Structure formats: structure tokens, C-alpha cells
Image (cartoon, rainbow, N blue to C red; front, side, top):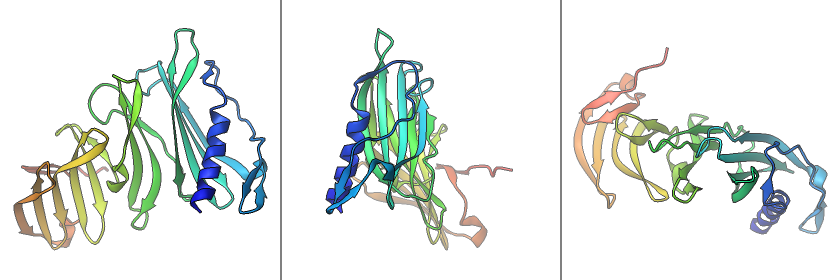
Length: 247
């Protein structure tokens, strides 16, 4: 199975990376002309379907100087995502700098989101990679734009923290996990990872922790709550403050 995935992703990447620079005119829809051989059976280019295509060259990274493309391919009964990131050269051509590829569920769209997740005035990128917990936990991969290198940093554990938001009040990311109860997790971006520094857990009790750099939790408060208090998402943990419900 792993070899099959590697072959498919290699084929897709070879197709997209055939050229290293592209004019400002957007790339037209094209057809793969290669033949894929998997387990002694051939999958023709006709079996590789482009399900979604998204491009932005206005908002990502340095505005008007970077471009991102995300393409969702269906290959037989599997889906794969290819992400290309570009920089604008002085001759007004796009230079391909990075390519990422991943498996994806076939149930959801990518729903790309471009927004500043670390308050550095450069826009970052996420897309939906999966859905969990009866469609309640929206799982996204997060890419942070690094201005010093003009590259995207893949946040390796971003899929562990569903329903991510940038938290302006605490200048962090918070995630909202739905399970038997709910958990609001407060996170800082350190290198290529999200690091927890506090959390609020609602079930029979509301339990609030601080978390040190080694990952050790210290209990702040524990209080019995009713069922209505379980489904609350918080934007601060000390003092405790909930997000306002959207009308």
C-alpha cells in the first residue's frame, strides 16, 4: 500500500514540477499523459481526476509576491493533495520553491483558508485534511509563512488540534476538541510544532491546567458543572472567558 501511494504521489509531483517557473497567467487545466502501474495493473491518466483546484497570488505570504496552489486528486478509491508554493522573480515569473503532498479523505473539500496565524503580518495557510468525531472535529494542516526564508513551514502536529483559531487576545492558537466532553487547548507555535501552554476541559467537571515547556500540567482549578456548560469554547483560561455565541 505504501509503495502504491509513493508511486502515485511521485507521478503527480513529476507532472507539476516539469517546469520551475511559470508566467503570471494562471495554469490551465491539463491532462496527465503518463501511465501508472500498480500491482501489475495499469491505471491510465484518465483514472486520475482533479477534484479541486485553488490558487491565490494576492494574500499568501508577501502579498502579490507569493503564490500557492492546492490540487485535490482522486485516484481510483483514494484522494491525494498536492500543494505548490511559489515566489515571484524580478522577471515577473513564478519560481516553484516548495511542493508538499499528502493523502486526503474523500469526504470533504479542502476549504483552503489564508489568514495570519502568528501575528507577524504575513498570511499563512490551512486546508481541511480530515473530519473526526462525527463531523464535529475539523482537522486541518497548518503552514506558517517564514519571511526570513520566503518559505512555508509545515506545522507537523497541527492535525492533532482540530477546529483551530487564531486567538487575538492571547496571541496564540486555540483548538476545540469534541469528545465525550470538550477541551479548549491553548497553543504557541515553536519551530515546526504547536506547543500547549494551557487547557480547559469540560465534562462532569471543568478542569483548568497550565502546561510547562516540558509538557507537565499543573492544576489551576476544578469545578463541578452542569451539562449546559460542557459545550463552551474559551478564549482565555485565567481569568476564564468564553467565546460569545454566534447568532
